[in-house]
Structures are given as structure tokens and as C-alpha cells.
Image 1 (tube, one colour):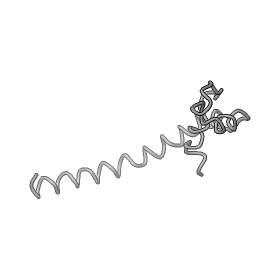
Image 2: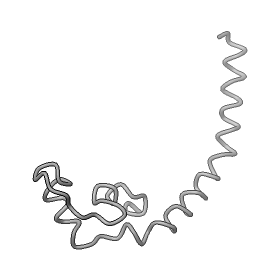
Image 3: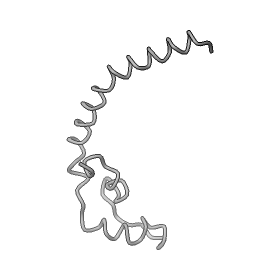
Length: 79
């Protein structure tokens, strides 16, 4: 790839990023709104963490819709 093609690609990428970035923020707000209720901590989440999701005990640990590991990674958890 030559200098001219690289310059054109980087300019296109920058402009695309400027237009798509706000859409990402809007989608993130919708995502948090839709899934905040299922990501609240429940009493069985401590048991899930204690048994490492069943990997240490070999038994099925109840999780609800999202397990405790997914709840930790949920975007609303860090704001």
C-alpha cells in the first residue's frame, strides 16, 4: 500500500469514526437500560463466585439470565 492509499484510508477511517462514535454511545445507553434489571446482584451470585461457576465443584450453580462473571463486566457496573 502506497503513501497516497494509506493517507486516503486513514482519512476515511477518521471520518467514519467521527460519525459512528456517537451512535455507539447511544447504543450503549439503550443496552444498559434494557439489561440493568437482570444485572443486579442476587444472593446466588456469591455462591456462583465461591464455586467458580461450578468449575471447582462440578455441580450446576443457578445464575439467572446472567452469571456473576457477566454481571461484573456489565457496563453499568463501572459508572
